Image 1 (cartoon, rainbow, N blue to C red):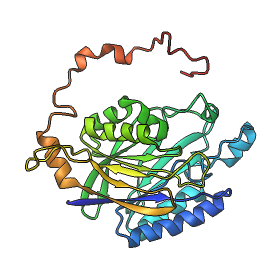
Image 2 (cartoon, helix red, strand yellow):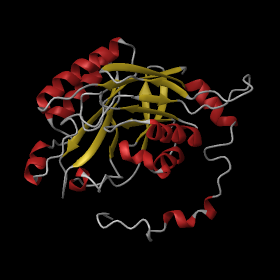
Image 3 (cartoon, helix red, strand yellow):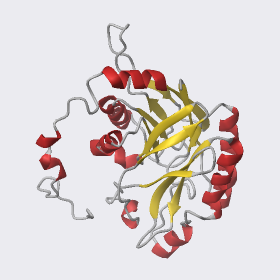
Image 4 (cartoon, rainbow, N blue to C red):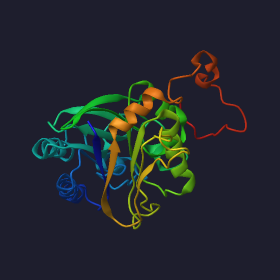
Amino acid sequence: MSVFNVALLQLLPQTATEENLKNGIEACRSAKRMGADIALFPEMWSCGYEIPEDIEQLKALSVSQDSEFVMSFCGLARELDMAIAVTFLESAQPLPRNTVIVFDRHGKKVLKYSKVHTCDFSDEIRLSAGDGFYAAKLDTAGGDVMIGAMICYDREFPESARILMLKGAEIILVPNACPMEINRLSQLRSRAFENMLGVATCNYPQGKPDCNGCSSAFDGVAYLPHQPISRDMCILMAGKEPGIYIAQFDMDMIRQYRKTEVHGNAYRHPDKYGCIVQSQISEPFIRPDRRG
């Protein structure tokens, strides 16, 4: 395949799940008309990333993976012949989860991921964390693409993208809900660079408190044989306003680059990395609100 088109749905949410469903369906239809292979929502689209302090209210706001909200996008993906990565506050025990499900263009669920690195220093202390990172083969009209997902704060940990690369991901989908400034954007650029893969991030636009748009895409290709210097890996940088933005990933270029360049898994020495998986935490990194 040559191009994998990811539609970043940088939309303002509503307070009601029903409204977000309606607006999300309309956005997906627009993305299909724009030539998207997959539509990606911002973080927890079902509730507009609202996390009530009251646990009973929080649970009432959550939806199950077989709810009308989620399954509507399953049917829509099949109707549009376009994959959809829908995000939602998922009903779970003991607390709801921050989840994304990817339906392929046939309406088949190919990937489900719940946020592993919950922001336990903030409102996400009231959410259950996910249990791992996963990659999956996505069937598109142009051919298969290996995808993975991480959510917002996950990008702060190089291990998130590294695991996805090791599991075969070529493109990482990143639902987001926070201010995307130079340092956070640099983290996404780094995850793409060091793993030689594409990273597509969809954020809420300005107007959603604590968000500022700037949805982005980095293709992970830093060097080309015919260019004497490195190239800019950023293939899309949205502004602050609401909109649908198409990131075009040149999969042939990415795949050829991964066969020849030095990053990713080419020269790693995992036998030297034992301390990375040790669970002990020492000062100055001890935090009383950290969960296991």
